[in-house]
Length: 433
Image 1 (cartoon, rainbow, N blue to C red):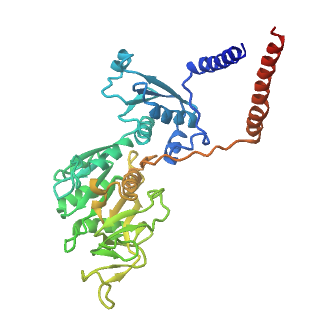
Image 2: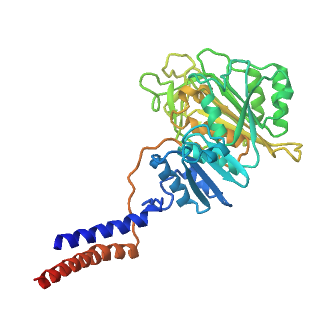
């Protein structure tokens, strides 16, 4: 009889707990609210001022993705979540024109954006796009040996184009043969600039900067290659230039090739926030002059310009000691701004344009800097470039009131309940004949 009573009580307790949890999909993140999300994500969520609905189309087994979305809800109370199984609710999937499982749809003030995969980068990127009311077009030039933004090979720029798209920035390949091709562009990118421009093409870029457009030039630091003279002459108006020899870094460079090194000297600038460094190879040393220009990344003190090409610093020659700028920017006020133009024209010069190609896009902070440079050139309000992070152990932090509650439950409530059950069983046993 005693065993039956205890079994019945245990089954009842489990039944009540199961009934209470059956209708709830809530998830508790033991870290402080939203702290398990990337800081960039939390900054974006802080800009959400109205209700934002997130719908995830997935089967019931997508528990990890569900937990990720719950973190978004914990970090921003204006977010509402909805989980839809396309097989169980095909009409809803058809309404949203679903094309793949795992799609996340973000809706905000009658605007809708899709995250094609349930990752933090994709979801936060969709939120950024839906928050923006204005789209910027960034044009990538072709015809002078530049990399193709549609190419997925190592030398292509498809990764960069996709990262910009995640941030609501549209990309387009253009030629400079017709100056009108740059009219819809907020900024133009020449990466890598292996060939020089014609006078007419240079005039087309100058026309873009005269209305507040941005210019990003990535040089091809191949040994012995010529620098684009007309293009650098144009950038000289912002105090930027280049010295045509690759940089060797004995401290931050690879043992096998010191011309490949991590430029980790990153000063504080809107275009470098969160950038740990940029991995460059055969980078051209830049020159920076005037108050309108700023250095964004430099080599170490043990670096030098290897003019002789022997990899050894030779005193008394043209070899120049570091630190040496490898990424720099410049800006200046427009002399005759229009109501629709930006107040300043901005340019950026990178000593190694191939640092942003697909094969090296994920190295160090290359991806983040590539996106943030464009963001700075176009004066966009936000940028997101979230790298994959391994799972981290969450530390449970309790307040004094929570500690007292846990102590009461574990030390008082549970033992008293067990003692009461034991006493009840003992009384029943004493009363039985």
